[in-house]
Amino acid sequence: MSFAYPAALFLLLLLVPFAILAARNFGKKRQILREFISDEAAAAVVVRGGREIDLFKTTLLLATFFFLVLALARPQWGERFESLDIRGLEIVFLLDTSASMNAEDLPPSRLEVARNLVAAVVDSLRTDMVSQVNFAAVAYVQCPPTLDYEAFKLLALASSASPGEEQGTDFAKGLALAGRMFRNSRSSRKVLIMITDGEDQEQAWPAAVQELRQQQVTVFTVGVGVPGGAPIPVLDGNGKTTGWKKDRQGAIVRSQLDEAPLIRIAADCGGQYYRLGSAAGIAPMIQILSTYERQQLSRKVKSKKIDRFAYPLLLAVLLLAGEMALSDRKISWRKS
Image (cartoon, rainbow, N blue to C red; front, side):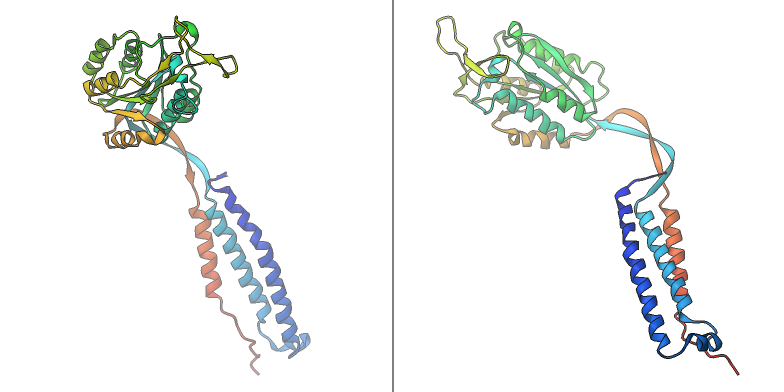
């Protein structure tokens, strides 16, 4: 046997002061009675004394309290199996992890703000399937489709800038891999949330966007950064800034938010573009997602313990009814 709310059992500790208080009342009542009649006389003239019935009524009240607390703790034993339909959207997060995402125009960095955005969106979901693709010059799956939001957030928040050999930004590779994540989709409502500073060196994304349109994927784009831009820090193994990225002429490179391709991608795929200043900046997007109709994604069988609180509750009611049926009887004298 287990309890749904075992903390409620601590209320049973209240039985101790109640029992002590009842014992003191018995003693005081007996002392008062002795002032009017001796024990020998009471035994001779009393058919039934008040002390015995008081003890019985108090015991009934204490037992009632005990079973009420037991019912409140919700005892459970046995199991039953329920079939649950999981309805939701399929959402893929596409996160830019190129070196420019380390820029600090959005403190502490664009990448940190982007990771927090992903976690904020997931916190607003319930039964939607989520996955994540990270991309720079190459793309890879950071987290496969899952309904385990806590595990997903651990992986999402662990996203880091791609290594030097994978640097550069290729929207086409990221969009193509994200599109492949929907190939086995059971939902007619598929959503892609692309988070990037908009800088793309390859400019090969239109074909990938066309493929997403054919798959009827709605794409929301989120621009991370400010139009004025910021220098790109060079980080050591401990994540500390050791300098700034420079071009071949030795000038410091400034990474600027490029919104034009993001606006076009969102428009071509039926979504919207948002400029991210903080996690609160995507509240309108979360509101739109909440209005989408959820369809069945899967079905699972779940075992559930059976509540048995009705048994102690019934006992408590019966005991209380018995206590109320007993009245305090005054001393009755024997008939001559």
